[in-house]
Image 1: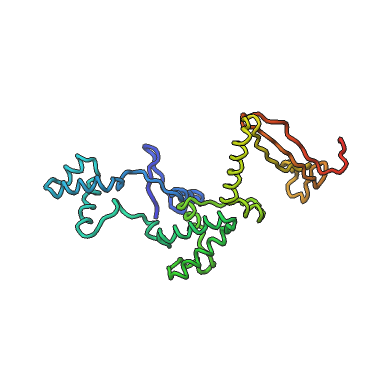
Image 2: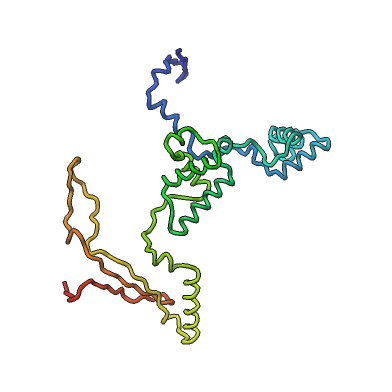
Length: 277
């Protein structure tokens, strides 16, 4: 089937849809964004406002006049009145397709999200793959129907997982290696005891702000990681000269007092007999 298209006034062109380039057809994939943003205000009227408008219509006014007076879409008001006569209405407008096709209910998803957050707070966070497996296991134990690709792959889909993170304020983070001693010591009881002792010391000796220091230490390696360089494509090994391949860790201690003044940083080198160089 050929199409008749007018591009410029006075000139016409005939073409077949198969003549379109593949890249032109594939551009349609980007028309619908992953996160949809509404472009109209239909169905966004507060429930209380549209309920008052429906009461006025029930009192004898016409839908057109009430909609114009309260600046409400006429179709929205008519649909709300028709729906209210048959069932209880909890929201205005149509329910989204995504919420209708959602695998879990809001209560189940919230429970799953709270469980994942609690595991992360206890330093036992689970990986994205484990989270998707847990979602499939949760659905199986509660007899919740799932898409066929979930069962085939043995875990929840990537699209569901991405939307699940967005709905419950979650994200994939790189955890910091934390020892068991640090994890168990940092709790409400230990921190509370520390500040109780701090308050007793300050009340006893009346330290001024310039004598209260906050000290922290960090480790710095003697060999820094080289930056990217431009080299031949396909070359198996690309090197950059450094002082050594494996450096030693140097501890840097910094201290700042309560008035904002800092002392010069102190370096602790791992040497029994220190050498100037």
